[in-house]
Length: 165
Image (cartoon, rainbow, N blue to C red; front, side, top):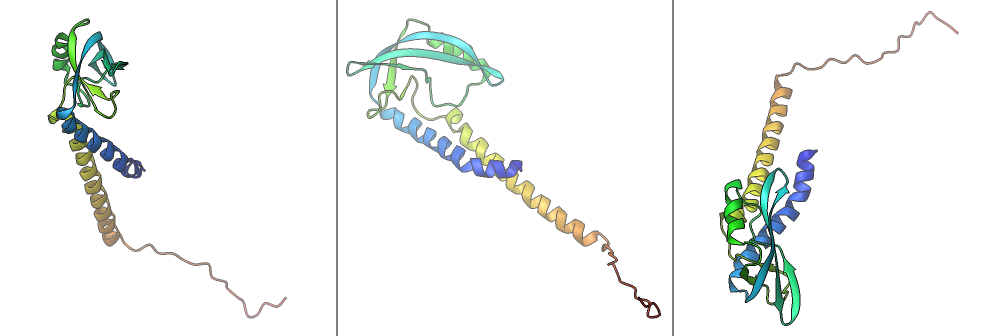
């Protein structure tokens, strides 16, 4: 059942990870505006602490607020303090925004191993599920071949020719 849920959700997760990588690559050509860091804190995301940076910026006179640091899905625990120290509250920062959608913004552009990690993890899980299903199929076939046949005795009607109703 878990495999079925994964196989149904997999294409959507794969598409989202692929789009994230494509946006990360495209972000290297995005225009830059000046912004200000409004909050910088550690936030508990799932089971670990992650940096949470909020910044405000203006594009063509319209104010925006963003919180994307980069396109990475997460950061190793050792990098949280380094990221927070790069973006202290009140600091002026360069904010990269999508030309057609200024609300899509980031502080760091481009793709790296942390950005592609989501895609790699999904592909590893997909391969593992396929291998487990093939192994399960093979073991069931092997078990059927080595198991003695199951004897069934059908219900038989015994008719006594000397009995009359």
